[in-house]
Length: 154
Image (cartoon, rainbow, N blue to C red):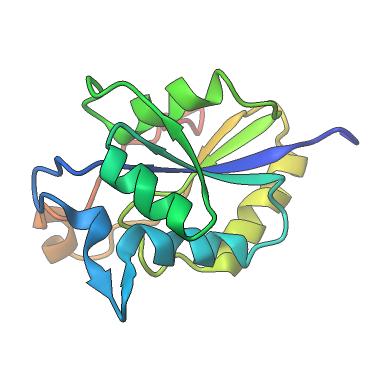
């Protein structure tokens, strides 16, 4: 796969159910979404890093720092729907979904995902997961859960 073009898409919206306005919360003087975008940029395997949002406030904040934004529908319920909408207009072979509240995303983890793309190029969309290790994590409503099928798909 010599023509692999991997794009990181960071979905973000102001109408978070748990914490409205979360992407623009200032942390050490920068909006949360900007911290995430900068951490993603520390991984050099992406051909582009895009913030996907339906909110002009987020669009303006990201552009203030020189970031790229694609505006999406405000009707999406899940972040993955926002990412899927953006993926349709991108010139790439693969998309990695980096959650818009994943403030401590580790660039090395993203690099590992990029390496996995070369192992499994048939999968176009990527999202990092980790096992739930305690009952407390299982019950915590702030931790997003997923189910993995026997075929290894989310």
